[in-house]
Image (cartoon, rainbow over all chains, first blue to last red; front, top):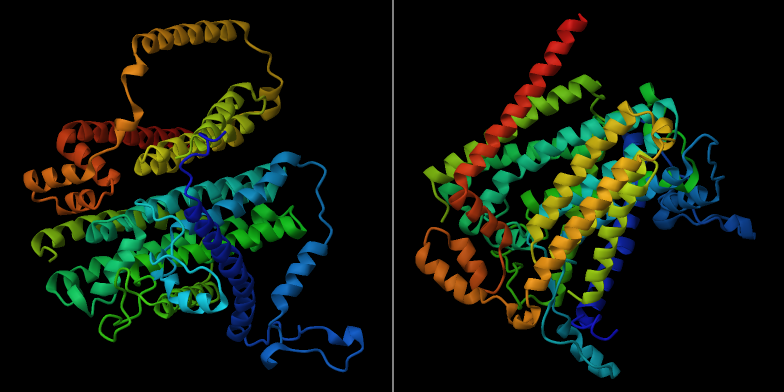
Length: 404
Length: 195
């Protein structure tokens, strides 16, 4: 048995597990819960309603005079109430379904959505040895001087890995539609597969110009480059202040637009939520699902949205980097970033993701839904060609005005 | 990679591969195929071939998805599940499998493993990087990666594809193009007949 387990790096393993637990259970899942709440409040504002504003900690149940509402804003505990409701509702399985695949489908949506987060660099690096003074005061051994990178798997194929795993998420939707053995879920599943396969093309092609500019497929290195030389869409410092980078601003903007549109289609968000459009298909592929199984689809959709936002932020908007960071002394330097700055970088990354999710929600409640043939036409006849042209344009510009 | 993980992923690949053949339900077969590809991708990644591993999932999982649609659209699942076993096909498969096994056995018998030491297989990336920097000055990113000891598998593959096999790549592209045009022509003609 010993040789089977040889060359497992235990410190690396522990650090990875801590990072996975932090990112999944302390960042993404709470964020999913609160983006559902944000969605409801935001839509309420847009439609001139109030939204969920009553939920508090129900102390009246225990004989107190008033319920506590956190921060005085009613409804901040709404996600917890929703969660409890999902867990306690009856989990009804219709008689005619294919039981095994009916149970498998929600997991197949949720798991890939969470797995894609491992390549996202959610911060620069954490120099834990800064805590050594405190630890020795308590009497514990200190950390080694090597900083811990704030990314779970520093792969050299970052965005491709995300696309590959995300493409496995289609199975969840299609199997849900098929296994439900019912008309509307079936149509929803077939629509979803057609839509996701079509938009995967423009999604993949849209980032090729970005990869050409970076000359790199590693997301962590992309973030470091953008931190030193200006974001791709905000080249205002470092090497960003060159003719080459500003000439590339147009194809990069185009790339960003195509990427965001394709991402909306991939995550099945309005205006492209053909797989679950309620005016035509009741609720689409999850019509036959109830309680926690339905909640898993819901969580999967929002987790995919968060990780899509993370990818867009990392590729185009500098990832964890602070705007004008190197100019105001908040830039990253390898091995020499203090702990507080590392934590600040993580915070900045989360703020950017939250802003992007609010953008997602804003789009959902402002644009009407496309028709399915319009959606396919847009994907195949506009987005695909535009992405191809964009690759050509970037190559031409990089040839005429070389970088550096 | 620890040997344990190798055995785990090999088991996943082979086990689900077996499921593809043995399963009665076509959906189970298709999904097992996808799982088998995932296991294979993990094996590629364990060999530092990250690009091939991810592309394995990206391309083949997508292809299996199309298989799925065929099952859903065209096949009658009940009829497929109740189908009798085809004795001739099983005998043929066993004979072919036996021939393959004999071939593998003879090849591995001729190959003396004791002469080779696996421990010597470590790559000298730094030297390769220096050589690359000296001979190909127009490719700075590859030599930079090699010099710090990272294997830039994606870039090296691109280099091989576009410099060594550029012509072959274009022939393949043309072939795919012909296929695509053929599909479009066929589907258009069907529509006119229906009208």
